Each structure stands twice: as C-alpha cells, then as structure tokens.
Length: 161
Image (cartoon, rainbow, N blue to C red; front, side, top):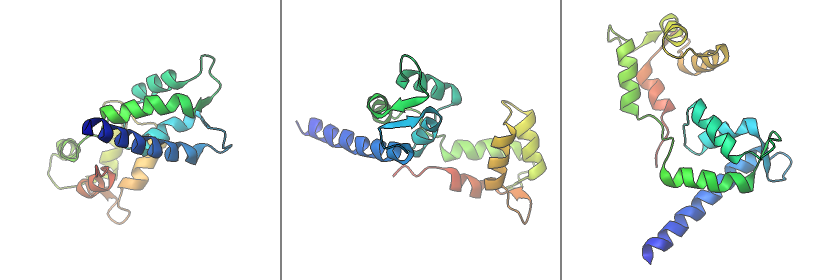
C-alpha cells in the first residue's frame, strides 16, 4: 500500500511540474500551446529528446487534424509517462567530457572558436547557423576566444536533484 501512495505523490508532483511548464507558454490561458513550444517545455522538465524523438512525441499528442496547437489534456498523460519512465535523460557529464577530450587531441583543456566551428559544421550531423551561433554565444569565452569545455559542461549539465 505504501508503494501505491508514494507513486501517487510522485505522479501528483509530476502533474504540477508539467502544468507549470505548460502554463508558461499558454498565452491565451485556454489549455493550449503552440506546437513549436513543445520542445522547450519538454526540455524545461529535464528531458533531452533528439529532434526525431521530439517529432514522434509531437505526432503522439497532436490532434487528428493538426491545428498547430497542443492541448494540455493530451500532453499531460504522455509527458507524465515520459517522466515516470525517465526517458530522454541528458547525456552524463563524464560522457560529454570524453567527447570534448577526443576533439582536444593536444589535451589543452580548451578548443579554439575556429576548431569548434570546424567540428560543428564539418563533422557528424552539422549544426544549423542558428544552433551554432546559440552555442558559441554560450560556450566561447570572449577574452580567450575559446571554449574551456570543463566549465561549459558544468554549466550545461542538468542537476538531477
């Protein structure tokens, strides 16, 4: 019985968090948000789905005939399940650090802005211009014109507690 009570409390807490996140973007106060805000809402709840996963998730909560808006009552059960299952967890800090260290073959503890731009546009799945500018504005130290990746990772990683 205690297990069921604990689960009910957890679900109630998730519902409250989801409602609060949803309401930030419910500008008309009519329990709907623009479909383009769903990714931001999901990420604000500590989830990091890929673009493909986000697309699938939107398809799951959209109306039969898409209106461009998502209703809270369709979003709530899907998002609750995602949080309960701990899906779309962020990449752990040590994995991010190893990825940066692979790019930093000289083991300097930083990458220059030019190196970062090269990796972001020429390797793997290329970043869009907008994504690149957003990352550079957050990651690059203007004085050294480089990214000290340990500091950047610390800033990026979501606190699990």
